[in-house]
Image 1 (cartoon, rainbow, N blue to C red):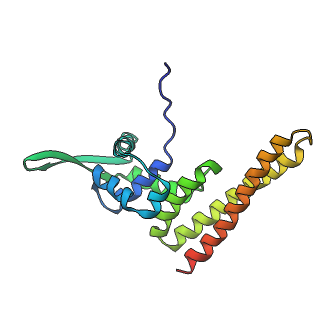
Image 2 (cartoon, rainbow, N blue to C red):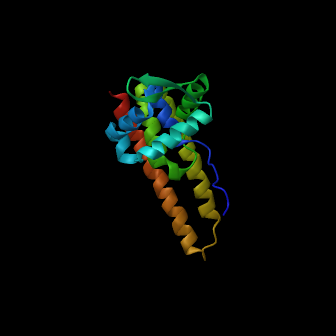
Image 3 (tube, one colour):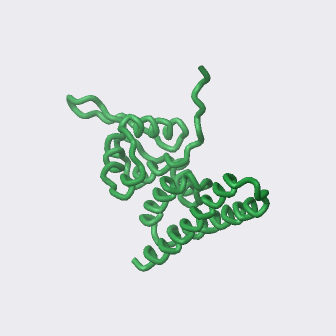
Length: 182
C-alpha cells in the first residue's frame, strides 16, 4: 500500500478565518463552522476532520496552541493564529480559486470571509476571480475550436465547461451588484 499523498492546503485555510477573529478551541471552531449557515450549505465535515485539519495547520506553522487547565476537567488546547497563519489566510483570501471544480466550496468560503474583511477585499476577490474565469473560458473556447468534428463527446464536455464558466461569470456579476449595494 502506498503512503497517503498530502495535498497542499487550500480550503482548509478558511478555518484560519475563525481563529483570526479570536483564539479558540478546536471544538469551538468546529461548532462555528457548523453554525454558519452559508458555510454549512457548502462545506460539511465531521468533528474529527476539523480537528485533523487544525492539527495540520498547526504542523504547517499557521496555528500555535497552548494547553489551558480547566480545574477538574481535562486540559484543552487553545489555538491562536501565528504571523505565518495570518499571511497564509490573507494570501488565500486574495487569490482566486485555481480550478473550476473548487469554485463551489472554496470560492464560497472566500466570499464569506472577504465580506467580513470589508468592501475592498470583497471587490478585489471578485475581480480576480472574474479574470481567472475569463482566462479559463478563453482557453476552453480555443480548445473547442481546435477539436476535429469527429470528436462529439470531447466537444460536449468542453461545451459543458464553457456553459459552467458563463454561468459563473454571470453569477460573479450578480455577487458584485448585490454585495456592493449592502
